[in-house]
Amino acid sequence: MDIARRRTLQTGIALAVGALWPHVSAAGRDAPIARTRSGRLRGLRETATHAADVLSFKGIAYGADTATTRFLPPQRETPWRGIRDALRHAASAPQSGELGPGSEDCLALNVWTPALRENGKRPVLVYIHGGGYNTGSGSDPLYDGVRLCRRGDVVVITLNHRLNLFGYLYLGELDARYAASGNVGQLDLIAALEWVHEHAAEFGGDPDNVTVFGQSGGGAKIATLMAMPKAAGLFHRAMTMSGQQVTAAGPRAAAQRAALFLEALGVAPDRLDRLQTLPVDALLKAARIRDPSRIEDMSLYFGPVLDGRDLPRHPFHPDAPPQSARIPMIIGNTHDETRAFLGNDPAHHALDWDRLPDALRRHQYVDLPPDTVIAEYRRLYPHYSASDVFFAATTAGRSWRGAVLEAEARARQNAPTWVYQLDFPSPLDGGKFGAMHTLDIPLAFDNIRQPGSRTGDFAQAQMTADARSAALIAFARSGDPDHAGLPHWPQYDLQRRAT
Image (cartoon, rainbow, N blue to C red; front, side):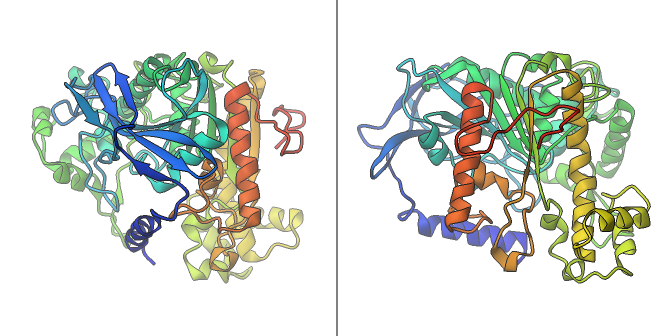
């Protein structure tokens, strides 16, 4: 089933399951009212039998519509009078694909809390979505915060920010007005964290205990924030799930990509003002470039830029950022990351030893001679099939190299760091996807029954979710993920490399 059809089906399931999910929502006279810097908000009281209420507020603006300030740092949201409903998610950021086209009025976040005000001092958990720097939304059903909020007596927040060319097109070398343009997506995240710091107490949380966690591109965004001076002090713990960012794009390469984009768009470098008036669709289309060697068009890469301004150094090269040395951090991946990307091709599940070298050569994740890689995997794991080696090698190349570099850099810094690998396999589709990329999201949120979860709904999946979400909550509370439901989890160091 293709992605678009699957997402449509998931949305339909979500609507159908609404009455069965163990909470109901109502915005009546007892609806919670929150006070923010720009006005009052009406939320929902979500109740469940034999469980505490959760108050939810969705689609809260933390910044102004970016349509009139493209490629510029975020501005504060416009105040309003009276009480504004915060009952529905805001639009996703502009993007191509299943969530497109979105809206430039996308700087919004969602909050789940057990109670307003009351000096609750609860840990605040802010989730940053994946999708690389190109796609995604904080409104995915997998990120619903009700169960995590209720389980841990914590405040849970998800958010949207500018993506792709809208968040990371580097125009600074062409026009000084756009000096920050290569990192405005990251500056959106900083603006959201500033909003969280300002409003944590209103939503029953502790502004001095904020944990950021994110999967895939969300983890990479967090690694980048750890090296951005403007983010210093805005979060106090960090967990990255299958997402690393060791280096950022250099300004020369980023400027070259901007030149390719402007050429495809038909805009001269001295006419950048035209970018402010062109339709969103035209901008997104220009970011797709035709490669005759590929069946499909591919997108220009847009991501954080080493601009010497907002990002003055690489996130984790040549060492870990000193500003984040005291922030406890969890770094992890899944056992079978690339089965999510490469596992849909039946040929990859039917490889033999003769065809394996060519299969490895075709994919960018392995940057060693295939024969050397295969020989070492066969020595270490003699029971592996050719397909097992293919998925293991591509997973190591794609995901573990960056994770190990970050963990080693943190260890040399004596920074508190924990490393994990998720081995729990998805039982769906005959088990062929294993512990695939994204599988840890519903486990961390304790959302295995939400649309989009690939964990299956059975006892072992729930036990894994219990252990995983409890580790996140323990980490948010104390800065240490150890808890009674796990074996002892020591910190990572260069001698033991505990994982």
